[in-house]
Image (cartoon, rainbow, N blue to C red; front, side, top):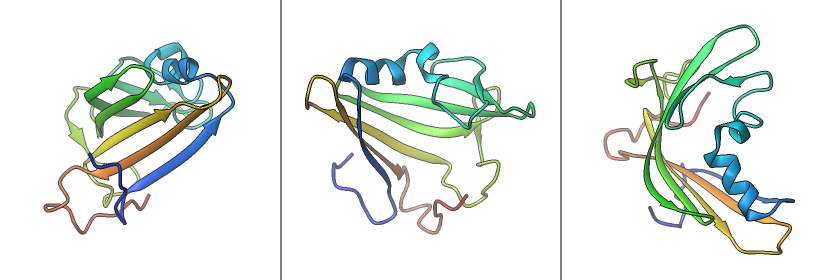
Length: 137
């Protein structure tokens, strides 16, 4: 994936007051992921690449990550989608126009020892087939 974000890509950049190693563990270890992934009150139900979040009312939303590139402490690239409990593709539960699959890239760059710089870019996997879809939830 190109480092340059396109007009409809979803981009987040942030500097965290934590070492890069801790930020890496927050994306790769379930006990860390459940501290921040999903809405407040959600819990990670299962999985490392196929898992679910359960909100405080008991509603379960499944997701699937198919990793394409892993460079420890620097970069994670995966295809991210909503899924059913069997791992099949599913539409966003609140938005029928959300893309079925997003190519997601998180790049970390070096900085001070006590900081982690991270940029996340999520782009539609098949821009030609799904040009009309937008990130409207």
